[in-house]
Length: 200
Image (cartoon, rainbow, N blue to C red; front, side, top):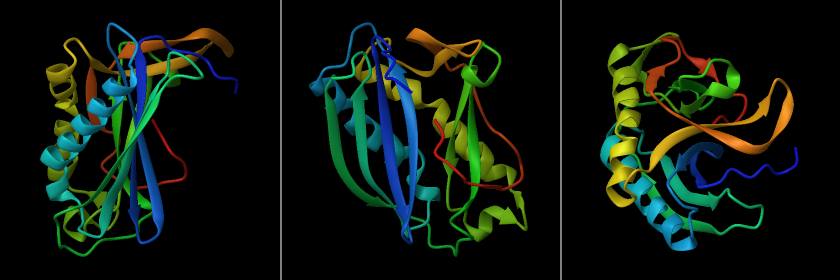
């Protein structure tokens, strides 16, 4: 689709690899003004700190957060910043298939697909699943980690918050993206899913 600007927002992509499989999770944020390149660099640093503090301990050591890229989405030609990371997870437990994932859902106060989003958590450790059922402990850990996102970004950009962006209204492209505050996080299902595409 043609680029649709979303004022005062940035899109951050966290790119992971596991045994040659690439997993990219995107997260959107908004604040009172557009993000310049220095803001994007600070956002990348903040997201690295968030992931290393809140999630790294439950990720296999064979999965690596390679790079975080943040884009100013107020303009098609806005700034972008890449941060090379190269951090592996801490967990040493054997893992299942890299395509079998837990998903964490982002909920807004608006209904419909354009009012929600999600990220994929992959690969799952064998200690986190029983056949195709994901244990509640890891589902709660991942959802709780996402619940801390706003506290991390607000500490460096007061008032900054996690959003889901809608680009269509009743099938018609919007002139500007609609940023909707995320109000809740949850594992979408206690059962494993197959990752077929990137989600945001």
